[in-house]
Image (cartoon, rainbow, N blue to C red; front, side, top):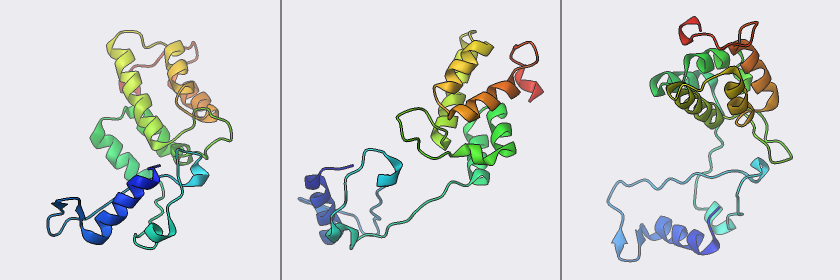
Length: 161
């Protein structure tokens, strides 16, 4: 998403291993991350000169790796259980219209929001639905909330997951 002037400075960093008077220490790796234009994210095309000087890796989402990270990061058990059961829900295609969609980041942020709501004493079925529909693809929010709520709409205690 960086402007052409920043791309120019990045090219200089790659070629000369320095920015202005600051030289990179020996052994330093220069790493950048970005989105693809197909992600409908904030993206600018890279110059062909820059593309020719970098290695571009396409990363894929791996539910097993994410679940291992999520366990270490304290992501809620019900979210980890949901993704373990429905791994395709971890990452959904970017919708054509700007609306929430399921990504690893969305699930982690939903976990944090649910933790905050629970800590504040306001975690109800309605709150859970609002938070889930505000972060996830609608089809994932529906199923996640349905599984998290018992037959009368109350949130089950965390230890039941």
